[in-house]
Length: 296
Image (cartoon, rainbow, N blue to C red; front, side, top):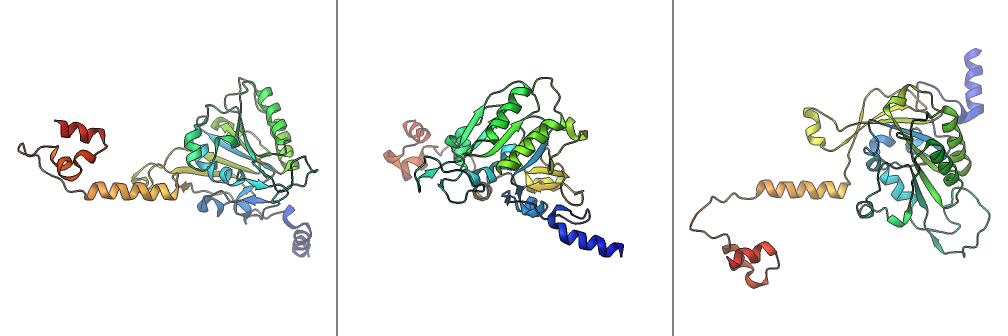
């Protein structure tokens, strides 16, 4: 009878209650993280929208862009007014059909984002808003204001070096409720020392160093990620995610293979280094080194 009552209760409340031995379904909207290995371990198969995601780091500014860039690129795509909006809002003065760009707000970032590098991976500088705030109170205030803005798609908040003030659980809960009310992506970066503290985050990750050892040779420059908290059973193993874009990884692999297969020419004092340029390109060469060799 007791088991039947529990089963009936679970069917009634739906996703509000989940079993600890199974990965829960997402209670709200989710967005793919861009990493298939990570999506397979997240409830709903992606980052939760309207919830606090906490990322612990051994040092500020370590690998968070590699982890979050795919979803940030996705949410900042130009949209048409009135289409694909997760939250209904009162009409604005923007003309119907006029494209609008959603923003990513950075509060307390440890260093200035490298705009050319981000733009090369699809995240334009015009979509970023960098807020410089030193104290904890300033960062929390700026974060709450950003969550209320209609054009903000995601908020990244760094609390690792916010002076000497201690981050309390009620601080994080206010941010979680703000993201929930406005359906925003919210990522808070905190130091590794905060792992033992309570947190209202629905998802808590530990972003570590690159994998070490022999097995890491084939996964050079990869991301090591541990899921510390999720709605489901604990994940014991560490996830290893590719840190490079698939196209870039393919290009680098082809380039490395070409270098390894290139013939090695023995040094001969009778051969001039300028000979290939004179025979192949002559005066048409535009490379500075070729012109120097030809002049010699």
